[in-house]
Length: 204
Image (tube, rainbow, N blue to C red):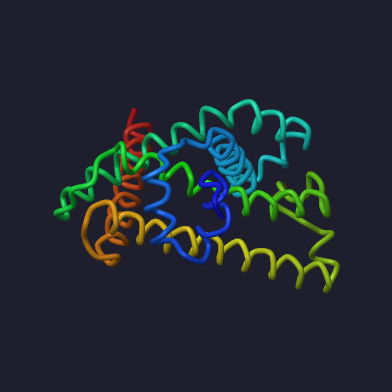
């Protein structure tokens, strides 16, 4: 436990408050985690958009890997500034310098989710990225297994939200509830911007 760089990998799951303080004291930016975060987001996008209907598995993986630095750093940068601005709206005092390393280290949760996605790929191959998944539909065992994996993935997402709520509360010097609303408002802003862009594209 003396190696500060290794502590967040374990304690972030069980002791988020203490982990936040250690991250802030250490202030290291885990580049590999940022890349894994980008890869996880890219594969999730391929999954939800069913890109396997038109692209091969190798193409999906190649694109996800190539663009993982862009996606990862964009996620950290955008999240950092949104959490900073919305936190200040709610009376917070945290700075982007404090928020950035915490957001980057939260990539541990994305890395955990990535393990689940790779397991799904090992089982189904490109079919995991397709609209129709007959292999799962025709197997009771696989259907139950994938329900379990989806629930596990959801649990990781909830765990990430809990960590960030605690972290933003610590950084902004307010309650964990305000930390949660900081995340919620940030998410709503992203949804609103995407909706406006979609409307503009439809009009023009």
